[in-house]
Length: 268
Image 1: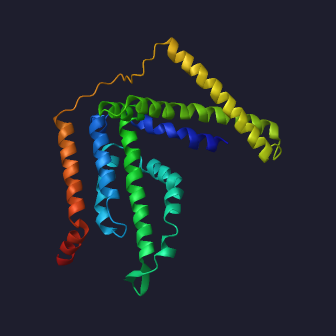
Image 2: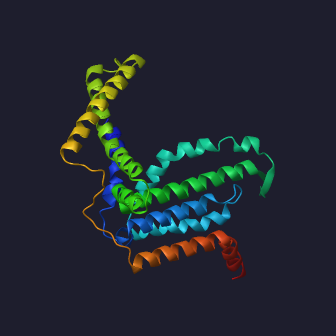
């Protein structure tokens, strides 16, 4: 149980990482959000059989990891947790696309395996970029950036509340599970009937908690505005970072950097 608690509540560690004071953390959230969004667009725009051309895009997350002082082990663990979804999406590609595209030391490699690997690489790049955005900005900072970029306020507030009260709901779930375990005495009380009862209790408590939260918000005069203690302003450094990053993305997307580097290494 302690390890279960640690894995679930460790979700908030991303926001803790955003308190650091590095070059990446000091950038305006709007710049980081737009740059990350453009990065993801460039990555997903590759055809399904393109693999080598995507490899230079690993430069961006590696740069953010190193400059932002983000623990690599933590990001890899989060990727591992989300990986079953990506693995399941393309699992049938090798069975439907069986035409051989490459020959690796006498072993034919079908287009299905190539497209499957392409999906995995895209998953790693995009999810890592999103995690690093939150780790260097904080989720409230991302929501503030969305608001400044004229995203509808209703959507932004709902997104912020979803993230904030996800931890509250998780804590409530853990209390119910602990109570069940203290009364189960081994494997008793772990059947489907008990699980349905737990879900019902959790639903009732969620409704009651939401009503109390709404009343508390109204009593404190909440007007739907997102306010942070830190004020942000786009400066020369922010614009320079965005222009440089987007220029590098365009070069990586338009030119086969991997092939060029390979030819240079071969000649030398």
